[in-house]
Image (cartoon, rainbow, N blue to C red; front, side):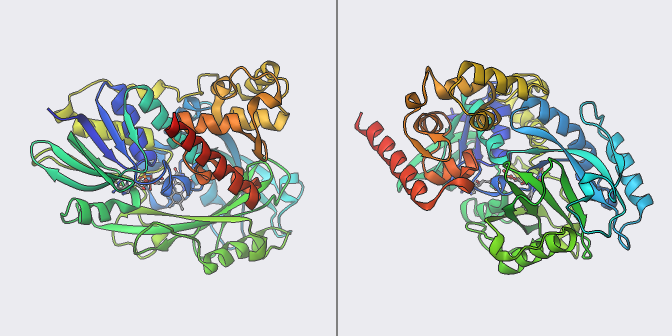
Length: 497
Ligand code: FAD
């Protein structure tokens, strides 16, 4: 008898999504993550829940259709974390012709069974306020729909839901050996201590480490030819005063987004570069930062320099290598490779934040011959805190402020977007600001940090500031240190109890 039906390596969106789906089907699930949840690629994405307009010119219709359909499924699943976003695509003389953009946007509007999001419209950029931040050369453009999400919170809420359905989630736990017979024996390392767990089936959802895990832990040849591709982003003070995003075409054939981010900022990305080595600690190069600054300067009236970059981050994706010349031409679709010679091993390659739910369903279909066929259930499910109408965020903010009148508008808004209907669980029976404990920086209180530590596996200041929230953008160095001390004390007090 194995300890678990299914063990999953990797607490990114794919591992957490599979854990949630499997736990909801009644399987005994173990998820192990070597660092923090979403500490890999799943906190370094462009944060779009999108079909991928650019993918249409590669004829990746299966992926685009699935992703467009999932957009609204994921929006309903987590209306606090995911929000509709309108994108402005300026027509650029000398780049893709207008007829091509029109056909692409027509397909984009109609491929995915769109019900909630509005369709495309043409805009006169010489008159419309949306043209005002841009250089004067643009005459017209198009406005279309996609969504934006908090990628790392999406991972955490999948893990939370999985745990509430019985999954065991072990963070800061690295799988260092995996031996296969009729079951898997996994050697797990936690702070220098070793532990062994067994499982009937194993999923390798190690993201950009998928190949490294095969080589070093499974000690087997790679199941697929892999290509690692790095993408970088920069964050700037807000470049425009409205709530739309821009998508720009660049002369090298890429597209670069400029997205409204965390109220006061603009997120610009991404680059696409081949990558080799260990993805841990991947960071944007000076060249990539310079490239993105140039894209901003080529398109906006404002001029910026690398010194204006407030924060930057990079992520690496592992994709199936089809031999494409350019990184941006490598197919983004996911591949699930099943080896069921003995206890089954399922290897996850690629995948998007957008399609995690479908990927999880497909993974469980693959494993059904061993784990049994149990009905899929996630299509109409809600993630924790997402049990309110898809257009109900403003109403929920108003209700939250009525229940906790001492919350400032911005704080209530931030908390509802993070916790949805679970804000009362974070705030407890607080009646005054003092009841929430010390303010550790920005509007982060001791009560919220304790909730994140007790319920969402946060252990360090970075877990809270960059993956449970983006408050890192608003924290000074001393505040960060103080938060670290507060959390270390809380861990110490727990140990002493
Ligand atoms: P990861 O999130 O990397 O998770 C893998 C985890 O495995 C890591 O946390 C790692 O620590 C852990 N791990 C590795 N080895 C071990 C071990 N031995 N033991 C325990 N744990 C281990 N998709 C979208 O839908 N929208 C976007 O806007 C978008 N933008 C993107 C932008 C960029 C630059 C990139 C690179 C990707 C983007 N994607 C986007 C794609 C998406 O982000 C990724 O496909 C997705 O995050 C991959 O998730 P994952 O769970 O497979 O990998």
